[in-house]
Amino acid sequence: MNANESFPTANTRLNRIKKISRVLKVLFLLYFVCAGYFFPFIYRVPEGFWFVVCGTYTTFSDAPMGAKLIVVLAVGVFFAAVITGYQLLNLYEKGIIFSARNVQLLGRIGCLALGYGLLAAWGPALISAWYAWINSSVSPLNPVLWGMTAFFSSPWIIGGLFVVVISRIMDEGRKIQEEQELTV
Amino acid sequence: MNANEISPKANARLKQIMAASRTFKIIFLIAAIVFGAIGILSVVTMMWMGNLNPIVMHNCTLNLSYFGYAVTSWFAYQLFSAYASGNLFAPTVVCRIRWLGIGTVLVGIVNGGIHMLMLVKEIYQAGASVPMGLAISVPLIEVCIQIFFNVVPGLAIIFIAKVMDEGRKIQEEQELTV
Image 1 (tube, each protein chain N blue to C red):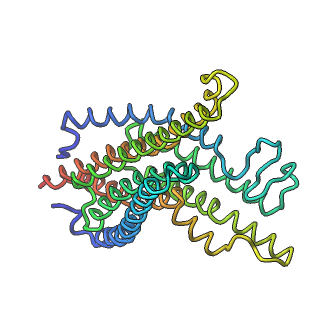
Image 2 (image 1 turned 60 degrees about the horizontal axis):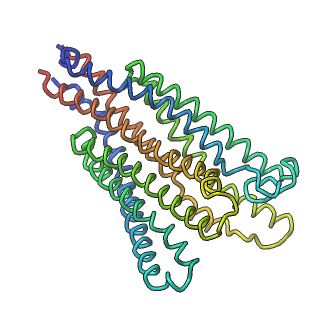
C-alpha cells in the first residue's frame, strides 16, 4: 500500500505547492525583467556612451569582438535561465514534484547561474588582459587576483553551485519516491 | 522491505552529496566569519572616524549590510552541516532551508532600506530645487526594484523548503512501509 496517496493532508500540501508555484511564476518573470534592467554586461551611461563589459564606447559596434561575444553569451545564458525556470515552475504547478525532468531543469538552472557568474567574474579581467596584450602594456586588472576575488564574492557562482547540490538532493528524493511507489 | 537502503547506488550518491556539502560547509563558515568581521570593522570605524569624515561614514553605513550576509552565510553553514552528516530530508534540514530563505528576504529588505535612507539623506542635504517627493521618486523606484530583486531569491528558497518538506514526508512514509 502506498501510504502517501491515502493521506488527506498530502493533497492539501500538494495544492499549496501548486498555488505557490503560480505566484512564483509571476514573480519570477518580474525578477528577470528587473535583472535585465540591472544587466551588468551592457548598459547606457548618463553621458550617452555605452558601457560594454569593462569599457565605455560611443556605440556598441566600437567595442572589441571579445566584449561583444561575452555580451552575447551572457544574454543567451540569461534567456536560457528564464525559459528553464519557467518550465520548472510549470511542472510544480501541475503537481509534478520529484520527476527526472524536475531534477534535470533544476540542475540546468544551477549550471546556467554558475555560467553567468563566471562570465561576470572573468569577463572584465579577460578583456583587460586582451587590451594589455595588444598594447604590450601591463593589465590594470590582475586577471588571477580579479578572477579569484570575483569568483568567491559572486552570488551567482555560489548560488548556482547551491542549486546544483539541491538538484542532486532532489534526485535522491525522486528515487525514494520511485522506490516507495514500487512497494506493495 | 526498504529498497532504498539495500541499493548499492544509493550509498555512492549519498557520499557524493555529503562530500560536496562538506566543501560548502567550510566555504560558508569562512564567508560568515569574514562578512561578520567586515561588519564589526565598519561599526568600529564609523564610531571612531564617522563624525570627522562623511565619506567614511557613507561607506561604513553601506558595509552594515555585511552583517546580513554573515547571518545568511551562517544559516547556509548550518544547512550544509546537516547535509554533510547525511540528513537530507530531516525536519531540521527543512527548518534550516526555510530560515535561510527568510534570512535572505530580510537581508534584501534591510539593505534596500539602508540604501533608501542614504538616498533621502543625500537628496535632503543637496537641497533639491524641485519638491522632495519628485526629487526622490525616480531613485526610490530604482531602490524598490533592487529590493524586489534581492527578495525573490529568498522566496524561491522558502519554496524549495516546502518541496523538501514533501520529500521528508515521502521518506517518512516510506520508512513506515513493511
